[in-house]
Amino acid sequence: MYKKRLTGAWKHMDFMFLDLVAVQVAFLLAYFLRHGIQNPYTIPVYRDMALFYGVACLSIAVLRNSFSGVLRRGYYKEFMAVLVDALSIVLVSSFYLVLIKEAELFSRVVLFLTGGIYLVVSYGLRLLRKRMLKKRKNTDAVSLVVVTVADAAADLIHTIRQDSFGRHRIVGLVLLDRSGDTQCIEDVPVVADAKS
Image (cartoon, rainbow, N blue to C red; front, side, top):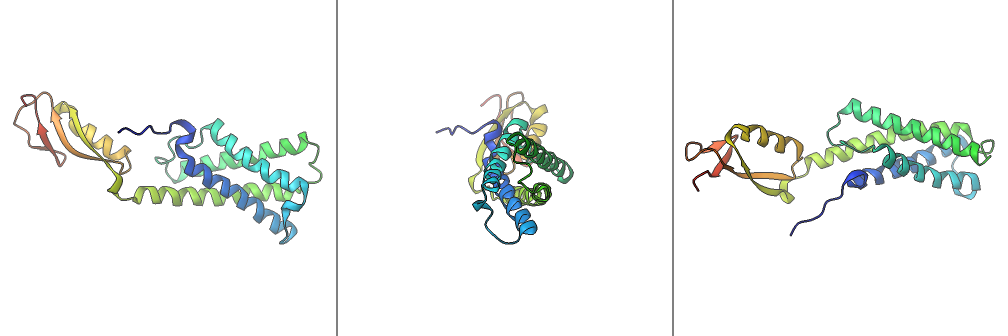
């Protein structure tokens, strides 16, 4: 009857998947811009870096909790979050290359282009996904009957409508402190009161 929802960093696995796609697309585009159209996965250091980019992207997202409040962020805050992620990926990747002593084999141009392209691609994908989620129809919305006091009803209805992104539909109110004098609050019918 009740579904257990994912919490924490795993709540937004769709955004994580989009970030993984974004970092791989950024890596391929950066490689193609620097070395021409050829398969980067045949060169061991580039193949290892492609794998490391994926691991770094996931690790940074989980450790920084990058997707906390992702649906509520505006354009500027989203851009800043993606910028921090991109800089973190470039920094961690640079450290990794120095650590494994293969920094001289990997192109710095590819490294920095990957970060820049990732910034643009990831930002675009996140905005598209957020737009898709916000435009989603109420077909799978959960119907709610809210039990509250009359003074808090309007604020509670407003909060639920604002924060649920279409996942909840308020179908009725039960007022615990009034009886019969109120028919509707914020276009939500009062279905029961203190005496019923």
